[in-house]
Length: 56
Image (tube, rainbow, N blue to C red):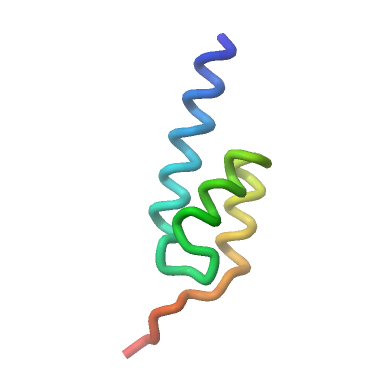
């Protein structure tokens, strides 16, 4: 049961880091923030950080 939650936490953190790879925190910043805290906190961080690509 614990292994399932850990695996789910890591998978969600990887998915979140993939989406945030072009934000100011970057892939590794969001990944480690999500792993150390929770993916919910990582999602909030993703939503408040800026996207580094300019809109054309």
